[in-house]
Amino acid sequence: MNPVILALPAFIIGIILLWKGSDILVENTSKTAAQLGISTLIISTILVGFGTSAPEFAVSVGAAIQKNSDISLGNIIGSCVANLLLVLGVAAIVRPIKINKSIIRREYPIMLGATVVFLLSSYFGLLDTNHWIGGIVFLFLFAIFVAYFIIRVKNERDNSKKIDVGKTQKNIIFMILGILGVVAGAWLLINASVTIAEYLGISIFIISISMVAVGTSVPELVVSSMAAYKKESDIAVGNVLGSNVFNILLILGFAALFIPLKATASLDHLLILLGVTFVMFPILFTRQVISRREGVLMLVIYSVFIWYIFFSLL
Figure 1 (tube, rainbow, N blue to C red):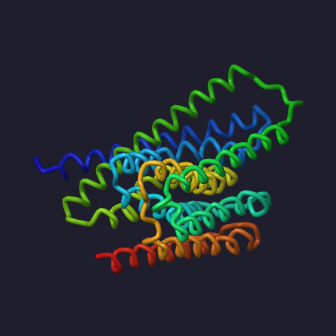
Figure 2 (cartoon, rainbow, N blue to C red):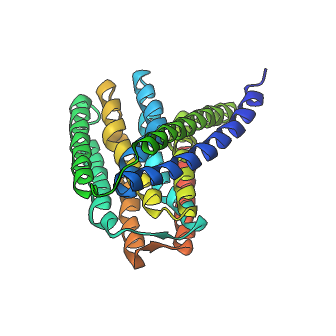
Figure 3 (cartoon, one colour):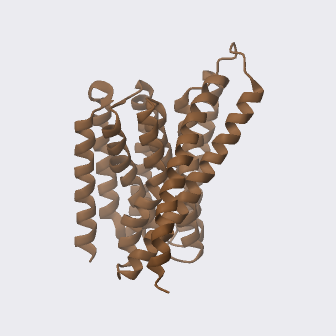
């Protein structure tokens, strides 16, 4: 049987699961944050960021275990670029995104710092010959990142609010169900996309940095777009910034423990990622809103990136 015949319905089912799962996730994240007196930016950066990064974790770490560095590295680079340009671009077109000042002051510098560490580690071979050293460093930095946000949660929590534990537990259960729906949908979508791409005879690195990367970024895309539509700007942006930090420090850190990732050979792609990260600063800072016009510009830049990937590697 032609594998594409099975891949097409799996693709459609994956999109449905992503849409419904993200809707449940965004709604219950907002409710839980309000009930616990915690800002939605904190929850979206840590919990939602981790939940939507689960596909990247499964793909990149799984590929590392199978000794396939092209998929591990390509997926992370491509996903980070897609998160910043494709995900936020589409979300801004759905509804202009208001930017919380703390994002420019705290969340953005953390993401930028993680990207710079990624580039420098690749340049000095800490993800190649000495890959296990790089892996340990990345995981250590990730532990600091999580500890920092735990401290922020304690400082920002409003203990004067009366918490309905029953409703909170119910919302958390639905948040978990939403994450599971998003992850399951992404898994179906990724496998269907890869099957179709392999049937067309596209190389594995191109698949990883483009199609697989977009596939693993679909949870972020749906969650951020739905959050923008519901006027939950903190979730829309925090999800993306948190996801990129998770991708680089946690997922890449784990992957580097298993195999050399050959990151030195991809310095040009890492420079593109760093450039995109810098470009995001004026977009976030200008009038503290991502307008629809800026969203369109971000999609145009992402299209140029995909064009470069295909025509430079084919």
